[in-house]
Image 1 (spheres, rainbow, N blue to C red):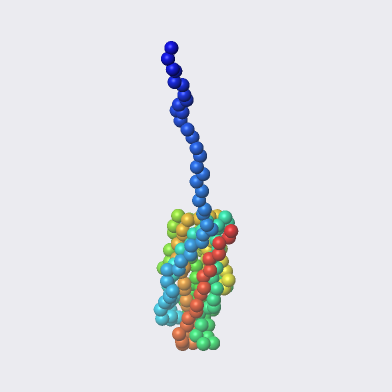
Image 2: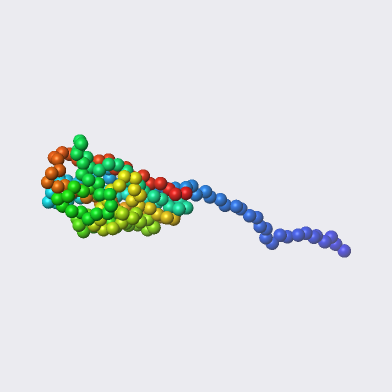
Length: 178
């Protein structure tokens, strides 16, 4: 009799690999312009202009965008900031903004993008303008893709408004709500 060879053959083998990734907290916020010109104001026309801003976040409860600053000012003279949503009215001292497509005057567009952000109460009605420093003007309640907001500004004067170069600096702050 002869020698018999014996052994074991593995038909397969297995192993595991753990794959990991980290997603950091993120808030993206951009302003598209640094200046808005409302033109030369008269008591028979409304000065208007726009700026835009874009926001997105992965924060668990979204984001808030606030604005702060003063009304249009020239020395000691001011144009009245609208404390509540108000229609634009020529021959009245008014300064305000909203985040809507308006017809009076024809300025602005609605919120665009694939996100869930919206204009805040007080700034979300077409043809109604408001400006209160510290107000939230836009927000999202959940993590969201980008939205672009067009901010529409209006200014009106009456016949007694003092001549001068009126201006203001408004600051927009986006805060993630983690």
